[in-house]
Length: 233
Length: 354
Image (cartoon, rainbow over all chains, first blue to last red; front, side):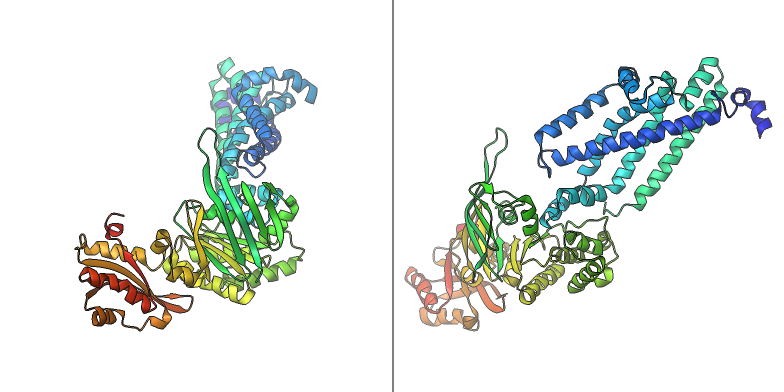
C-alpha cells in the first residue's frame, strides 16, 4: 500500500501524516473546523430560527420588534460573502479567541458564516409544522415552551435533521476557504500543497477526502431523517 | 340549568392593512347550558369556527363578553384573565378538529400524555390514565402506534381521548367529522353522544353537515354571514324553520331540491303548487295525501319523501305537487296546518334558479 502510494502519488506521500503539512493534521483541522462551528453556529441558528417562527406575525409570541431585528441580522450576515466576512470580523475574532490567524481563529467566522444560513433553514423547517397542531396544543393549555419544544422542534425533527445535513455539508465547504487565514484543513492542502505547487495528485486526494466526508455526513443524515419521520407525507 | 358558556354581543373583525374590514362574527349572543349538545350549522365562511374559537380565546373577540364556567374570560375589549389562568381554563375546554392535529412524532399514548403535561400525576398515574382514556375510545391496543399508522376515524378517537385527558366540562368539536367517511362519522358522533350521557360533557358541535346535528344535538344555531339567524331546540327549529337558509339546512330540503331538479320538471303550471310538508312523530303515520284528496278533491303527487330521526324521534319531510283551481289551492295550507303538520309553499323559482 505505502509502496503504491509512493510510486503513483509521490507528492501525496511526501506530505506525510503528521506535522504541519501532514494529511492527518489536515483531516483533523477540517473536522475541528466543522465540529465547533456546527455546535456554535448551529445553536445560534436554531435560536434565531425559533425566534423568527414564534415572533412572526400570527406566531405564538408575535412581536414585531424581535422578528424584525432577527430577520435583519440574518439577512445581513447572509449577504456578506464568506471570504469577506473572514476579513471583516477579524478584530472581533481577535477579541474572542485572542488571535486572527490559524484554525482556532477560523471558528469565529465559520460560526457566524453558517448561522444565518442555518437560521433560515430552521425557520423553513419549523414553518412546515401545521398550524393546526400549534392550535391544538394551545387549546390543550400548552405553554409557549411546550409548543416550542414539544410541537415545533419535535414535529419538525426529521426536517431539522435534513436541513442540518445540508448545513453541515455547506460548512465543510466553508472550511476550505478558511485556509485563506492560515486555518489549514483539507481545503488548504488542496490549494497550497496541491494547486499552487502543481502537485495535482495532492489536489485529487484532498478532494476525494472532502467528498468522502460529505458522503458520510449525507448518508448518516438521510438515514437519521428517515428514521425520525412519522409524518404522512 | 345554568349556562356553562355565555357569549354576549360578540363580534370578531379582521382588519388587514388597507383592505376593508372583514366582520367574521357580528353581534352574536349564544348561551349553552350544561349538558347540552349544541350544534352550530352554516355554510363554509359563515363564521362558525371563528365564533367557537372565542370560547377558549384561541380567537380574541373584538367586542363582547365571553364567560365560561362562571369565569369571565373576555370583556370590554380585553382579556380578563392572566395567561396562566387562561391555560388552566383551556384544559377545562377540550377541542377536536377536522384534521385531528395529532402530534405525528409521538405515539398515540404520548399524544394523550402530552395533554396531561401540567397535571400533577406521577408517571404511573399518567400511564394508567392515558390507557384508560384510550380504552374509552376503543384504542387501547394502539397505544404504541404512531398516528400515521391509524385510519382517520381512529386518529379522531385519539384526538378525543387527548381532548378529554384533563376531564374537561366542555368539548368543542370543530368540523370533527367532516374529513371522515359516513360510517366513521356516525361512530364518532355516537361516541360524543355517549360521552355526553356518561360524563355530562357539554358539547359544542360545529358542522356544515345537518345530519351530524340531527343525530346528536339537542339545540341548534344556524349561522350566516357572521350572524346567528336562528337558534333554539333542535326540534323546534327543525319543524318550524323561520329563515330560508334554515329551511335549506333542515328537512332534507337540499336533498329534495336536488331530486326535484333531477326530475327536470320545468316550471310549474299555473294550476300547480309545490309544498314542503314536515310532520313530527305523532303524525308520521297519518295519510296527509289521502286527506287532501278526500277533503279538497285536488290531485296530489308526492315528489320526495323522507323520514329522519331527530335525536330519537322520527320526523318526516315530503314535497308534494298539488294540482287544482285557485280556491282549492288556497285551502291546502289551512287544511294541512289543521293536521298539525308544518307546511311551506315553495316558490318554484327557488328550485329552478337557485
